[in-house]
Image (cartoon, rainbow, N blue to C red; front, side, top):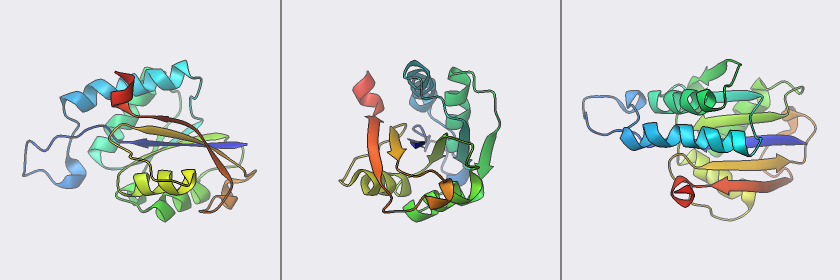
Length: 164
């Protein structure tokens, strides 16, 4: 069974209006919660084999902080196409970038695509705030088979406020 982890980037700063959306950094809360999510991943023994992240600063910083919290030893792959990607594009990127020897993949990206994907894969609407983490078991043997409509099971859904 393959496992797909969806992590929305942590809360970002809107303080400097001159900074482009792509370049917005994490705010104080975002910097605090990202490692908490990483420790949760370690505690639940869900460390991914591969992390695919949007190139946006807030997503990259979240991915790095989460990975550092569980001492991730691999390279985080930064993908332009994950920036503001739709649910379909998120799946497409995993489908076409992940080797079948990889069992657990984590995507770090943005709403509305992430929330839409979580809702579609779970079969019902799911609020997906910043730094939320959803973990799905997939009824596929090959990542090439990953698409909307595949058999999925929502194994875990954590929202930061529920952990405090």
